[in-house]
Image: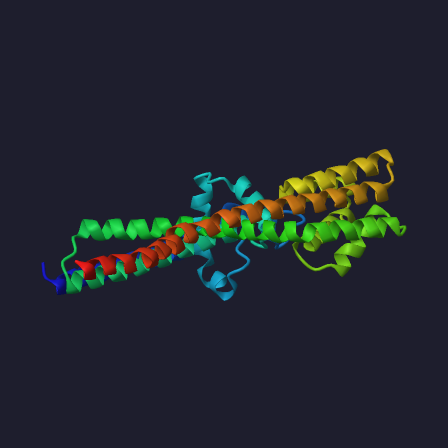
Length: 310
């Protein structure tokens, strides 16, 4: 088969897939369900959609145009049970405003984009060179799979960066809480003062704690929810000490000052560990770069003199 024929076959396959998707979307997603058909006949009917289903919220106009197809793909992914509960926890750790449906939609879009680019590359390679169809199929599948799981790596990096920021902000926030309580504020008042004056990831989490309290949760329940979201050992110990002091009536100022001191000591230990790792890292260019060059500069003149003498 010639290159032109390969190109024609590829374009025909792509066009057939596109027409099939459009036909499926037109006949399947525009048809009302049984619940939607009988809902107007029921007493107390409202036009609101089902609240238990997560909809796409972050794709804007693209979400409106391609929502049926993307939502169908998200539903198929949810049927595979890819760990939506764990994903919700990870999104909370990253401080992301996305829901599970938005995240799965981003994974699908990345996979489709990678597959499209790989298909274009394979067609170009088939036109200009010889490319076996099986190799092209493997390349397309591999590219889409890598792009699909690359979103998880991006989320992991976002979680790690946010944890680093929280640990850097935590000693200052703990000191501010201790000073506020020592000045006469209650635990909730200290949280409100710090959340309104401070900026950063931990202040954002305290705003979520205050929102939970205003919605009806107790202070202990809201702080425990914050601990479950962050899953950081220093923050968990701090929140545990705060909740125990609040439940048992222990003076909060003393407890918070002790907790702030522990946080400072923990920060010092972490800085010493980082400094030790940096020292080891600095030995690599010294041993493999500077010392060999020093030996060469010291030995090469002597070898030159020996060659001249010979």
